[in-house]
Image (cartoon, rainbow, N blue to C red; front, side, top):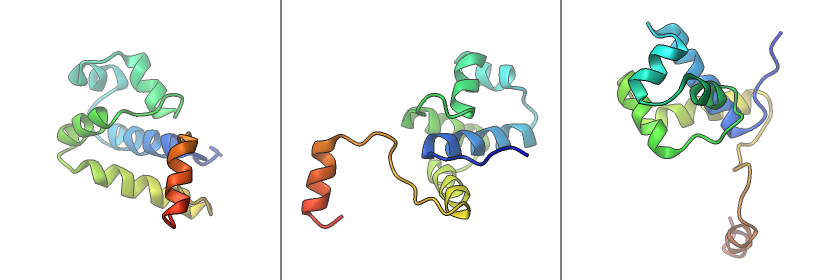
Length: 103
């Protein structure tokens, strides 16, 4: 059994991979449509690289959805495992500002 995603990047990658596999494209075909390499797409799908917002927008256009749809699905995957989604690397200064504001 495949271990579930542990980070937001892994969950986003899992969502993109699922949507791709349910559609008509191989990794290579989808990468070509998005103007990237198959290896880069594979790294995103495996959660090995953070997914840039621009890439989410491009995927959303390809799948005829909103970028937020990926975030919602990723959050559901993480919450199903009892994980509260957080950024994998938040700048400590930003984190301290957020805490001082009560976030």
